[in-house]
Length: 329
Image (tube, rainbow, N blue to C red; front, top):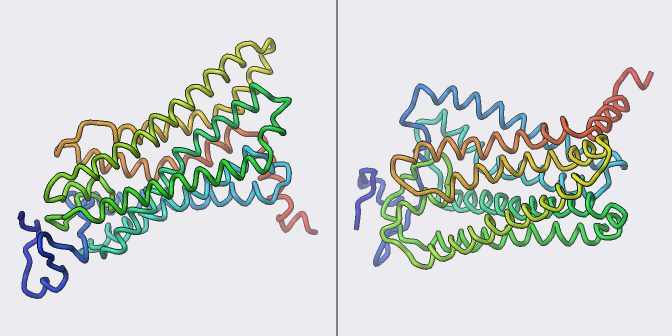
């Protein structure tokens, strides 16, 4: 068996449980960006600002979509779910990152690591499915506008949303439970969070089971939703090009432009992380991509939808006027 990257003293023996064939660690060390101590304060400030903007932007979008009855439509119902996912996703890892960037001992207990892994996988997996659902919503709205309210009724929207959440949470549970039982020969995770791929690099030996689980989930959550999104946008673009008036085309493009931008950002980061050759030299790049993937994309989502959507901007203005002290005088 390989030794842990940490030197284990007599006092530390109590922090791990020895089984017959492997060691079960009760805590992990998140190496994060400790190789670059001069950058840690800069990363702390960057991550904190991005995290606060993410919370503020997504929370505002949820509140607006709930309070303004004009936004009680399938599109904003899905958008509210997406904002909630982004809040949960960033909150599963960024607070730990912020603490560790200032701490000398960058540790996390085993149970905390498992919960963090599950939440990040669940939110990320659910968002993959949800983006495909939102693409279908745009397809129906543009290609079958007269039947939109019938096809995308409240019951269907709730069922599609529930299906996305269940799919994401179950696949995350499968991945996490499989990873937990992999024997680990170290407890230093070369990442700023308990990311499943970084954790599996500590495995004492390769496991066919976990490899098959990871492959099956990756195919289910990346290529299949992407294919459905591409098919939806193929029909959407075909319909838009058949619109005679330039004003009609611009309006149709504006309704799906924000979603398409989010899809490109999200899947671009996801594919660069999970569908590329793994190598030791790429680990630092993986951390940077993960940081952008976990902070920048959730922060940009509400900004993109707000800037490109007149309905959201008008609803925000109405809400501000309604709650302004001057309007009450």
